[in-house]
Every structure is written in structure tokens, then in C-alpha cells.
Length: 217
Ligand SMILES: C[S@@+](CC[C@H](N)C(=O)[O-])C[C@H]1O[C@@H](n2cnc3c(N)ncnc32)[C@H](O)[C@@H]1O
Image (tube, rainbow, N blue to C red; front, side, top):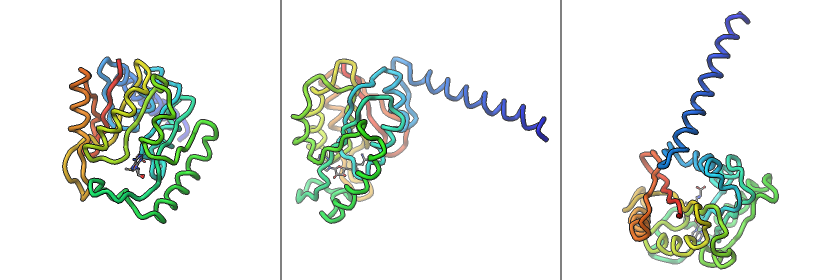
């Protein structure tokens, strides 16, 4: 039985190794191909972007913790006001009541505690937090806050100057329209920004709620 298991284990290990090699190959192309946003940390490592990064819109820190687990960078700043907004344009299930936001903040705080100094929580809006960062200081920014057109335009305008040359500006939910009761204008805002800046937009292969990525020259 043991003699049968050994070659099978070896085969399984070599299959895993080839899968990893293929993944690195995909991510190292001039136009990288990402299956989903879970591969973003690896792309950042491949591009040697290992300094400071920011996630805008954190909620329960599900993605902030994924980033910190997979990314070899020095520090992630997780920006979210955990606040309810009385804004008719912000039609989103994430716009929960204040007592719910306080509980979600506590979940995020606990989830990020294990990362120690590599994690910094900023309880503020995107517009309040942006002036705390110097221009050209960040390796990446991931935008996933309010998804209506005006908010995404504002977030891109606020955070784009904060990136180092070669840095990554990315975000969640590359789509437009009302989906599952939430209002999106992300695709339009990103496409307009990319066209004006003359940049290609790389999009993950997810059928729904894809991630968009631009590399700043
Ligand atoms: C879709 S959730 C984020 C999910 C998270 N990125 C993830 O994938 O785990 C959107 C979050 O954006 C936050 N948000 C709303 N307005 C914001 C603003 N002006 N600046 C920063 N965050 C904001 C909300 O409080 C909410 O937690």
C-alpha cells in the first residue's frame, strides 16, 4: 500500500508544481492574466511591489486579510469610515445602519489584529484619508468603497496621484447598472480614466464582480 502511495504523492506534487509555474507564467506576461482577485497579491509580488498599499472600502476585512496573507509587502492601510451615509446615490447593501457598521468594524479589527504592524486601520472616508499619504508613495491602491459612477471617479482622482511609477491602481466590481439591488458605475468610471490616461485595463476572468487593474507608467 505504502509503495503505491509514494509514486502517487510524487505525481500529485509535480502536478501542483506545474500549476504554480503556469500561474507565475500567466502573471509575468506584459499583459498578465488573473483568474480572480485572489491572485492580485501574487501579481504584486511578481512585480516586486512590496512597500505600502491601501484598500479603500474594507467592511469585514475579508479582502484586506487575503491581501496581507498573500502579499509580501511591508504594510497595508485599510480605509473605511464604517459609517452610514444618507446619500440617495449610494444604493448599496453595504450602506448599513450605524450599529451594524460598528459591529462590522469590530469584526474587521479582530480579523486584522494577527498581522500586527503590517496592518493599519484608518477609520475615515477615502477623501479624509487620501491627504495623509504623500504623492507617489504607494505601491498599490485597491478601490472597493461606494460603487456609483461619481464615487469611483472621485476615488480614482484622489488615489491615482498617490501611486509610485509602476504601481497598481485596481478595484472591485468592474460593472455598470443595478445588480442585485446595488448601483454600479465602476466600468464607466474606470474606462474613462484609462482612456484619458492612455492605459490598458486588465480585467480578472471572473464572470461577475471582476476586478480591474491599471499599471501606472
Ligand atoms: C463592498 S464593501 C468592501 C468589501 C471589501 N473590500 C472586501 O472585499 O472584503 C464597501 C465598503 O466601503 C465602505 N465605504 C463607503 N463609503 C466609503 C468612503 N467614502 N470611503 C471609504 N470607504 C467607504 C463601506 O463602509 C463598506 O464597508
